[in-house]
Amino acid sequence: MSENSWQENDSFNELEALAALVTELPDPEDPEVFRGFQGRRKKAAIVFAMIWSSTIALHLVTWGYWFVLGLTTLMSVHAVRLILARPCDLPKAIEEDDFFPMVSLMVAAKNEEAVIARLVEMMCRLDYPHDRYELWVINDNSTDRTAEILDQMTTQYPQLNVFHRPANAGGGKSGALNQVLPLTRGEFLVVFDADAQVETNFLRRVLPVFDRGDVGAIQVRKAIIQAEPEFQSKDANNFWIRGQMAEMALDSFIHQQRSAIGGLGELRGNGQLVRREALIDCGGWNEETITDDLDLTFRLHLNQWDIEVVTEPAVYEEGVTSAIALWHQRNRWAEGGYQRYLDYWRLILQNRMGTRKTIDLAMFWMLQYVMPTAALPDFLMAVLRHRMMLTSPISAMTLVLFLFSAIGGLRRVQRLKSAEERSLLDWASLIAQGLRGAVYMFHWFAIVSTATFRMSIRPKRLKWVKTVHRGADD
Image (cartoon, rainbow, N blue to C red; front, top):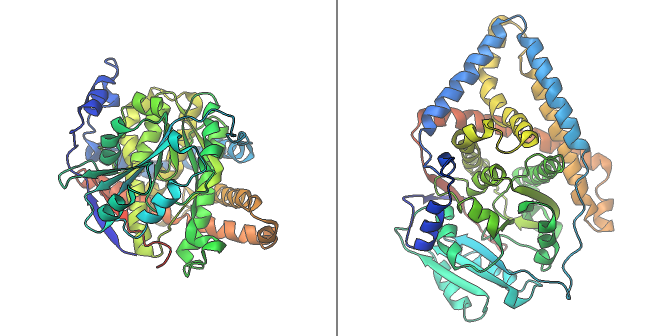
């Protein structure tokens, strides 16, 4: 599967309504929330140096190993709470005599001729009153037949609205969504990728989750379409596809559990629903990041909005089928995820999210970024001093957490299958798949360790690599 670069240039400010919205929102007493994001390389270099020097220092002091054991114990307590949590059940779906809120579906598309027609047909046939939802597809200066296909389909589907961006439009996906936001009418905004596939009752089932407390956004479980039996893909047994299938189940489980204990649920881009009020409260999508979903996750929580994660219904998307494509995609995710810590660290340390969320965030920052960055100096010091790696206890705890989360996530997905499909997935099979998924997840160690080093020596880049979608017939 090939990859195309989608350059992000300067912000596009043609729509003055949105420009005014973003400039008026910041709190004068807290200007950093929406200030331009400067000095990422310097901050990344400082953090990188701190992690390396701290790791080396712990090897040189007599109590270093005991410090790591104590930290592992605290993190293990949090991990056990997470695994044992019981998330809320999905509320009753919207019925015919209920109120149907206005919804705007949004898709940013660039060179998506292989999948865009299928997406439009599916989205315009949802089991939801046609006068209560609209579909906005933003053609971001595609060079293939995407624009032509979309223009032809506008005559067939009255819900479809097409917005064509010129060649000089910037901001990437965030810029495309921001530009169309003032034109949308929905109380709730649903963002999909061009390869997304959902069930017809998707909106009826998910929208009632917004009735819970201060829910600003919802992320549905992402699933890999090639791994589904009914898809009958030639890539169904591809190692990377099977790994991504377990990874998505694991990811959904972890974030649903985090949300259940008062931690951070996270957005994943495709299949995310956002309350308009919450999005405006955050100033729209951030055009100074390469991962709009991960950045919006932090800004929602910093503004006291919750994010719920649901297992069913799911949004299906194409998985990448080669190691090179996976490396490019995950590097973008890792870099974008790290950028938000560098951008919002002062607000996080001020406990703007609340104590439970801050503690939860600290643990996963350790697992996702500190541990991979510390792995190399820890290994080198262990070899030089002929001793075990200091991070071994935390690494073991991480493997156990990933294993239980993968099994838990796969088990939840299994319960949604038919009786015939469930009979093919016994506990032995679940454990085997969970173990493979947990081991597969350790590719993040290599990706994150190189990403954190690269960000500390390279100037800020505002560019992301878009995965090419091939469609069902390839």
